[in-house]
Amino acid sequence: MPSAVFQAPWSRQLKIISAISAAMLLAIPLFLMTKAPPEHSILFSIALALPPTILLLGALFMVRGYVIQSNNLLVLRLGWKTTIPLQGLNKASADPESMQGSVRIFGNSGLFGYTGLFQNKKLGRYRAFATDQEKAVVLQFPTKTLVITPDRPERMAEMLNRHAS
Image 1 (spheres, rainbow, N blue to C red):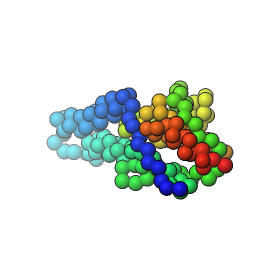
Image 2: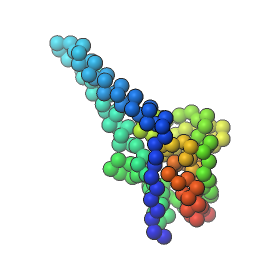
Image 3: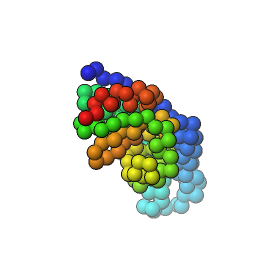
Image 4: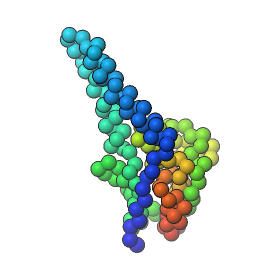
């Protein structure tokens, strides 16, 4: 089966959160430089380096798109990809309300995406590779649940269901 490519559009909320977060992460070291002591301590150097490092790591993990290739789903990142085998997929469904009420367990919820482990009443514990919660596609496996947010959720769900057991 030839590969299918889907974009990962950003919601308005994600654009705002990312812009504000990036501005703050860049402003913190600039502000600290105006208060720099004559002798820099290790702690001060860490305080200068940490915000831009967080920004860079957030950028590296951003979701740029999705590709269905062979029997895998590829989550395109900045310069790399996460491969998710589709063996054992029970069902994929477009569900724009699936991420509502979610609590982040581990990951990122707003700096260039919503990625990591989350939990809510509807899905239980799940892993997200999301950029626009209203375009959510839920992938249900026997032992895990994933959420992705392609530009064409219904089409993605339809194509993924061809891989379902």
